[in-house]
Length: 186
Picture 1: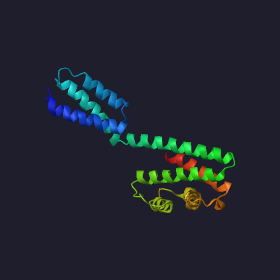
Picture 2: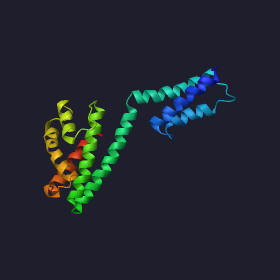
Picture 3: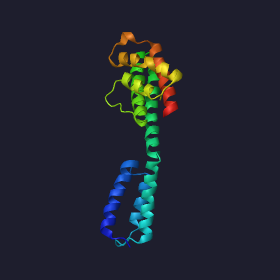
Picture 4: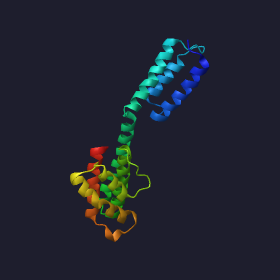
């Protein structure tokens, strides 16, 4: 039997960590809470303790195995996809400047997240800096590297309201690039 005071101190911290990592409705949280709820009269029998510990170790294994990061990357990809869809709709409606702003925002954030996920320190860097960091570590290459070289110019024009420097083709090229980048990396 486990001593209730240190057990509940650990269980509270563990539950909080699992909720923070996976959300309150995740299977890990539900299983952990179910095991806690099954404890009667504060007697934590060895089998119950092993069950709760097993749920915690399963959550830890998912985090250590990269599942949590993959989930975050997938959700980021969905958000970026929404930006791209909106950009495509704006371009189709003849609003290429709006399309460029949306597509460039999605691309810049995706590039930064991709760089960070690959261990690069890019906080506070411009898009040029992020692109150069990715190139220096060979995280982009071939046609992707060549196409990416022109994206900061379009991004700067879009984000600094230099509308006369943007064409519908610029917006379309960013949209096409970011779509392919998201498919490949998110």
